[in-house]
Amino acid sequence: MNEELKTGLYGVVAEFDDPTDITVAAQRVKDAGFTRFEAYSPYPIEELSEIVVKRNTRLPWLIFLGGAIGFLSGLGLQYYTHVIDYPINVGGRPLASWPSFIPVTFELTILFASLTAVFGMIALNGLPQPYHPVFNIPRFDLASRNRFFLVIEANDPKFDRDEATRLLRGLNSREVSDVEY
Image (cartoon, rainbow, N blue to C red; front, top):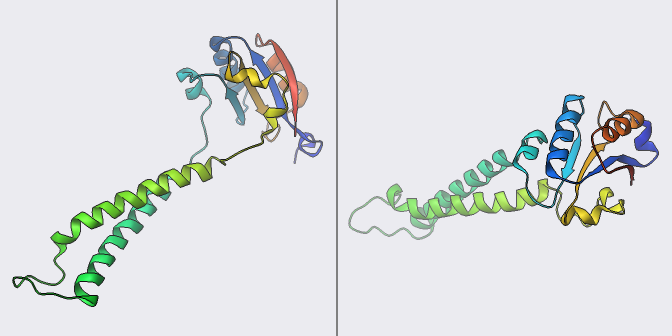
């Protein structure tokens, strides 16, 4: 564990005035070998989102699992209803008439997959998040108006407080400061 984490340091943050500066800074931070850094801006910046790549997520697998559970639930519901609980022979068709099971099975597959997507995204994003260490930065409220912030986290394997501060100061930043827990 880094000494910085033991002392309550979350990371080092730099404030930028325009999107070009933060995009260039994020690319330089990535080129310097840092892997755990985050950018905050008042609006989406496509180039920046391509640079700040997130780790692999389990969400697609969770959605697939939710859809599979919905599929099996739909088939099981239909089979139980038509074959076990209340079998009615209409027109000589078989009790387990699979083509008639398709609409309910399809709907439950979509329902379970979409609910898994919504609640899985919320859970994996750590929401709701009423507190985050970057909220301790005095000027961070400007991130929702007209400023851009780049944070290098202290739990990055390459993190050294002095090196990170020196790197961010050399990237046309307005201000560089520490982020405490």
